[in-house]
Structures are given as structure tokens and as C-alpha cells.
Image (cartoon, rainbow, N blue to C red):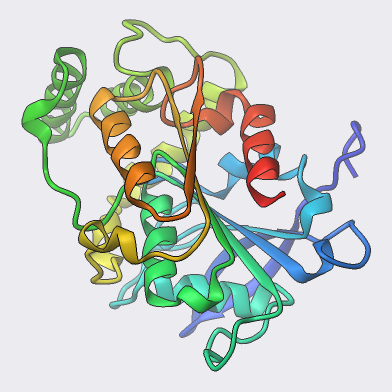
Length: 296
């Protein structure tokens, strides 16, 4: 237990084809149904790792078994030397780290509810999992998710975002890791219109530390995609979903979230005022409330 009475995560040994996946788990503190029959899996953004979810998850341990893990090349999970799919790793983590039934059993709806909470690229993984294994997913909470197969509308970027992305491309070409780190924080943590660092203190320090590992590993998050084009199939997703976004996020991504919420058959949406792309780093209480409301 932490000083404020919340539960600390425990490390869980998980291996997929001999590759160690770093997993943190909070065991359910609730007794009986439904908490004992629910697993919530937190899927991190492409500029974060599982640590980004800790302050949010610690407020939700009464909802079920909570799991956060580092995808390959992120945080404490090493880069993979061979081919793999993130969606396969997801189900392997759930099978080994939660009380959920085996994901191979698709014959009937699972008694154990699995909720996927995904941010950005983690949201893409959550949506792809819901499409490829719909009987396994009880619900989705999506925080400005990327969507596989979505149209490339970069020409519609607002001036502030376009300028920052151009600077980011130049820094990558120049091999300037520090500049890339600072620009990522400007775009995703502060929001492109902020003009200067808006989020400071431990949240910024964590954002920079997480992304430093990712950039050093040169992670290609698209390389492990499920091969699903979800965007044309959104109307086929039967899963209840909450789509949330910060009003300081990249405007083009906000527009995509609005369309996503309109097209998913069983979706509702939330606007997280005063936050950008990574709201759980600065407002874990707000994101915890969104998740709690979504799960009910």
C-alpha cells in the first residue's frame, strides 16, 4: 500500500515465445461480482510506457484486476529480434497475468469481462483487438486513439501543429535526440497551441524519461500491427466504447475522435478540458473518473 492508502502494483512474469514482457498488476480489492470477474488492461501510447498509467490505475483497484504492460521496445521490455504482432502479445499477457479464461476459447461469450483502456497507439491496439476477437472484449475506453486504416490527412493540420511536426522531422533527420524529446513533449503533453511548456514537474519528467527509452530503441510501433484496417469497419464493432479527448490536443486528431464516436455503434464521448494528448499524466483523477463511469 502507498502512503495515501492506494495499492502498489506487483510485477508479473510473462513470456511470449521466449520474449519477456514487463507487466504490472493490481489485484482486485473488491469482493464478489462484478469486480472479481473483471480485468482492465491499460495500453500505453507510442511515446509512453506502462508507468504512464500508474497514478490512474491506483485509483481503480476496486474495479477488478488491473494490468499495464510495456510493449516490445518500450519501458522494460526489450526490442524484439523477430516478427510478432502486438495483438498476440496482448492476449498472451491477459492469459498469463489475469484470471480471465483462455482467449483461444471463442465458442461462447466469456464470463470474465475484459476491458481495454487504450491511449493513442494503445487505442489502435484496443480497437484492433475488439475487431479480431469481439467475443473477448467487454468494453473499450479510448483516449485519442490512433485507428488502423484511417485516412492520412496531414495536409489538414493546423499551423501550430504543422510547424512542430516539421521541426520534429528536421530533428530526426539531424539525429538530435534531445530536440525530438522536447518537441514530442510540446506536441503531446502540452498541446501544439500552448506555445511554451505548459505541464511541468513530475509529469513532464516522466514523459521525457519514457520517451527517451523509446527514441533510443528506435521503436517502429507500426511494425507489429495486426494487419487490420479498422477505419472502414468501425460500424461492425459491437463493443460499448467511450471515446475521450483533450481539448488542447492536435485539432486534426480531435476531429478524428469526433467521427470515431459518431460511427461506433455503442459509443459515448467525453471532452477532457484543459488537457492534451496524454491527460493521465497531468490529470489521473479525471481519467480515472472517465474509466469508472465507462465501466459502471
